[in-house]
Length: 244
Image 1: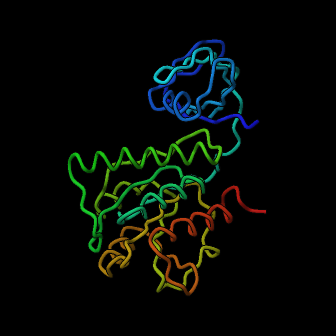
Image 2: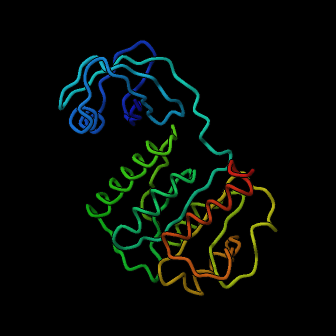
């Protein structure tokens, strides 16, 4: 029987009892309907997995006895920060989910000139919490022991300033002929993805002025939620942990 893998923000220490946080407890108790004595695999973002045995199971409270930590080899040596322009519907959810599966380190939602989504105040906070939940679920599914952080929404100017410390900064631009193969191996990457209508010429020029290199991924124009998956996969294959 498959042992469920669950994220909890509770501290985990071998030999100690721990109460799962509310979301994890509800999932284990109400959705999975697990009982005392059953086994779990837990992670809390510290980079390790923990075996655990349920000692108390209810609909609102689940307590476990934490077993020894286990090394988790799923993290890529390549750190990628994704700057993803906001998109409508479930497209942003898809981009976040797949970026986490592909090994991204953190995600920065961006607002650009052609961005059709406007978030402020409580609405922004609600969407950020939702996307963080999507990232947690994706990490549970793909076996990662860390959860990429979803940062607050940034403008293009804020993003360019934030990403300055990265070794390599790339802006997807289908009109360029420069390929990834011509670039030196980086340790950290900032990847900038535009909206459905693409970044404007001024935004691309500003990014290039600030040190971003244009990057193309073939002759076809990719959707805003497809582009980061393809770009991250290529970066991981060239410089990360997906090469043969």
